[in-house]
Structure formats: structure tokens, C-alpha cells
Image 1 (cartoon, one colour):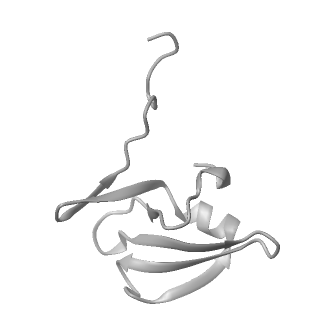
Image 2 (cartoon, rainbow, N blue to C red):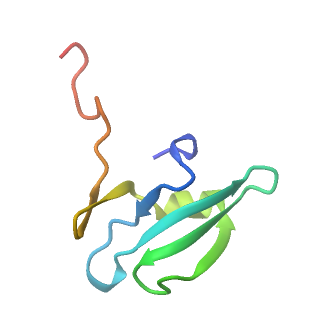
Image 3 (cartoon, rainbow, N blue to C red):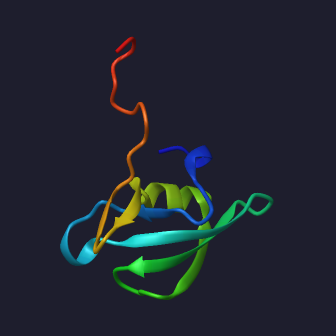
Length: 86
């Protein structure tokens, strides 16, 4: 995942298992300072907001997720995983 793929309002997961699994919502990207603001949606510190640098957020985030009924699932990216020319 690249920094350019971040979307304000998007939800991201660390991809961990059990109690370490977490989902964060990206609230703001402050380009001048290189910081992001996010809210923990699932996991430790739920409902709290934090600020960290973009690189730290990117190192944590494994992929974007979406809510599907009562579960979180990896966001489908059209064309991802397809071989060229297929």
C-alpha cells in the first residue's frame, strides 16, 4: 500500500489476529507537517483519536477494509490480482 492510496474517511486494518487486530478510520492528512489524524474503530483504544506521521501509519496499515453487514472485509480493488492482458 502506498501513501497515495490513502483516502480520507477510509478504513484501514493492520491485518493482525486476535486481540492485536485493529481498524482505524483516516480523518485527516496534513501534508505540510507529514501527519495524519485517525480514529480507532475496532481494537485497543477504540473510539479514541490519535495523530502520527504518515510513514508510521503506512507501516501499520496492511490494507483498506469496508464494513459488510456485521463484519469487516478487505476492500476489493478492481483489477487487483489480475494478470496483464486477461
